[in-house]
Each structure stands twice: as structure tokens, then as C-alpha cells.
Length: 267
Image 1 (cartoon, one colour):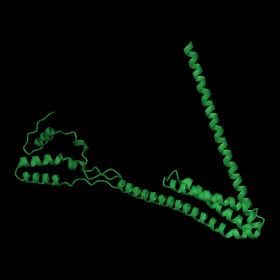
Image 2 (cartoon, helix red, strand yellow):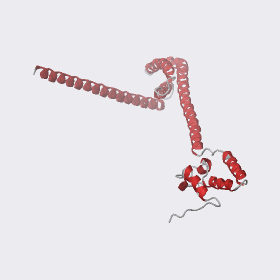
Image 3 (cartoon, one colour):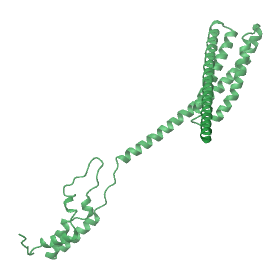
Image 4 (cartoon, helix red, strand yellow):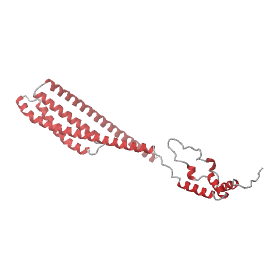
């Protein structure tokens, strides 16, 4: 009775622990999904604001918005390309490390550009623009280079895999259309020559030759090589009704068919 109580208590604890674990995992997954959705919404709002500022405020303020928009777009596209290809290509892990360092510089520049949007002194803003533009172009160029290299690498792998698949399919198709030719009938020709020579010597030789012609060898019984498109013709080659005849029966049949042999009336 005590063992049953302890077993039920242990089962209850296991069920409670499993329920707590599943609940925690579900809450964390929901939190990650919510954070991802909020982050995407914030990025969309910020990009929309920058596009509107670029069109509504010409001059240094509009150029700042243009720099921020191009920088954010390039870094985001590069990150998506690298992280999408990393599970299939382990060589992109080093590129991801480099991108993380580049992304830190891009984030720092974006924060600096965002602070300069509130700069009331226009001459100071104009004096800082060349240096900020040069930094933004360098970061954007590096990010684009990483993204284009990853895309070219993925396309190259896809082309190589398709070429290999074409070669394998061509080889398999050739194998499906191929069949091995049969052996040369050299032994059969030699046997027929010997039979013909012995047949010219006397009646017994003729009987042996007729017996040999009635029971062809394996080469003649097998016939020509079969095609994969259909069975080979059986006329004159596949004598299935003679495959059960033994050698003794063949000798008796040859002796009975020989000239001058006395036939016994079995009726």
C-alpha cells in the first residue's frame, strides 16, 4: 500500500513538472514572437518616417534621412541573406562574425545620424555631412559585398548540384537503355563442324549428327541476347518442349531413328 502511494505521488510530481516545463516554453515562445513582431513594427515605422523626411525636408536633414535609410536597408538585407544560408553552408559562419563587427559600426553610425537630426545649427550639420557620408558608404559597400558574395556562392552551389544531377541522370538513362550482348557462338560452330565431319564417315556418324541437331547446346537454347523492349523471338531457338529430355532418352531416340534399325511393335 505504501509503495502504491509513493508511486502515485511520484507520477503526480512528474506530471506537474512536465506541465510547468511546457508552460514556460510556451510563454518564452510567445514572448519571442511578440518581441519579433514589435521589432518589425518599429523598423517599419522608422523606415516610413525616414522616407517621409527624405521627401519633405530637402537639404542636410533630407540627406541624413537618406543615409540612415540606405544604411539600415543594406545591413538588414545582408543579415537576412547570411543567416538564411548559414544552416546549409558552414563557411558563412566566419562571414557572420565579420558582419556582427560591421553591424556594430553601422549601429553606432545610425545613432550618431539620429542625434544629428535634432541639431539646430545648420553650419555644423553641413560640416559633418562629408565625413558621415564617407563612413556610411564604406559600411554599406562592405555589407553589400558580403551579401553579394553569399548570393553568388549559393547560386554557384545550385549550378554545380544541377550539373552533377544532369550527369547522373544521363548516366542512369544510358544504363537503362543498355543490355549486354550474348557470347560469341564459337563453341557451337566448332561442334557443328565436328558433327559434319563425323557424319561423312558412315551411318553411325549420321545418327550421332542427327541426335546432336535434335538437342542443341546451352548456347543455341539460350538464343540471342534479350532486349529490354520485349522478349526475344522463340521460333527455332527456345525449344521448351525438349528441355525435359535426358541424355539417355536422346541416345535411344537417335538409335531408333538410325537407318536399318528394327522398330518394335508396341501395339
